[in-house]
Image 1 (cartoon, rainbow, N blue to C red):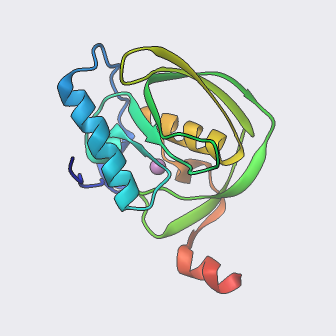
Image 2 (image 1 turned 90 degrees about the horizontal axis):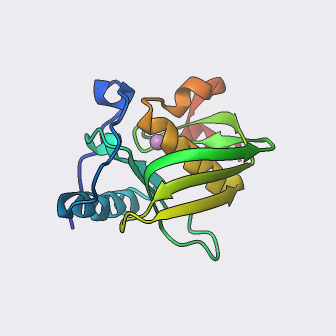
Length: 161
Ligand code: NI
């Protein structure tokens, strides 16, 4: 268990396409444990492997909603989306900022878990947003590309409230 360094916007690794995982090795399990540690330490709800400098199709999500477990997605694939939601979104790779993003309100994702078993993950609202945000990272995309209007400093938004 260890905290890894989070890469921030401008680092070219965040713009690269990640490679499929062929086998969940001990090394990958350690990476996943570290990703959870790193995400919780930074108070995030999701983290993708490229954010810690690893170009593999792995992401973790924990939106801490009632009834939700921490989620590991290996080689995730979006099967279905539905509806629309618009809300402020942030990213641990874009510290201190938020912007308004419209995404589907529902997402159904197929992935492997840590035991290489195929799992279907369904989410609505914040969970759908988190799943899709993390999967975008695996294709080299940051939410800032989707922001409507400008990017805000979080301190600015707190003042408005
Ligand atoms: Ni992110």
